[in-house]
Length: 253
Image (tube, rainbow, N blue to C red; front, side, top):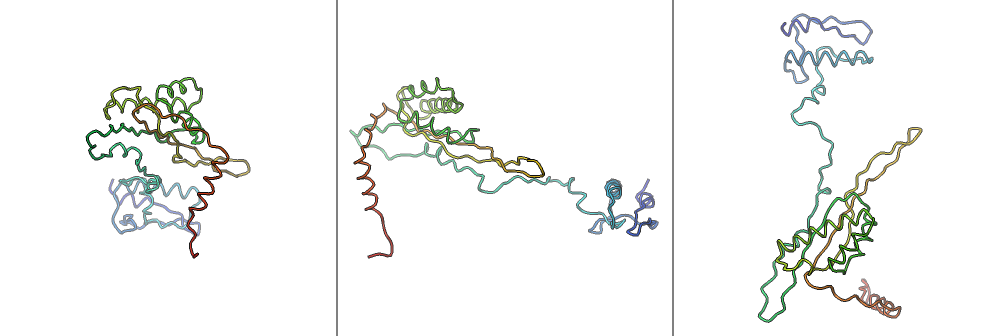
């Protein structure tokens, strides 16, 4: 069966309510004026019949809408957000590649520093912050012991990150003893939130966020430093006054 026989059997309802008889020998064409193949004609007829069944009016019988081919394009349409705001800088991991100048003879050996993190953790950054500050300043063995007996979800995640950082220290940073490390920095950060729709009654809706967080840790070779003495009220007042005096007030004498 050729294309001309297909075009002879097309009956389209006219805007006035009657049917229009197609002209013999006329082949359906696309909006660009090119002739369509037999498969394209069959697809066009199938979509046209569906529109006529729904009460669609005003479609020219021999003009093929280009949007019907949208699902058959080479690159499917995507609504994924691909802007630069979703890119991760990776600045924390790049600190492992810092190269220091050679040390002078007799100078004490510079301790190794290991930076490690885990991103996009399905956990609240505020809950992770309390666990991160719990182990800051501890030796790595003491920190692992504290996290082992914590029933929090974030504690097990931080424990896995510390073990990974400990392996990196021995493998990549020439640390001789695995236990000769302490947590110099431990903090959390806000991840990339995902917004979703929460459907309410009476046609209303709300926006809910699926929260994610990042965890950052810095290990330093050596024993942990002694804890700082708590500041008194007078020390806090002196520090506050010094901050006020160090201000730069513009447009003044």
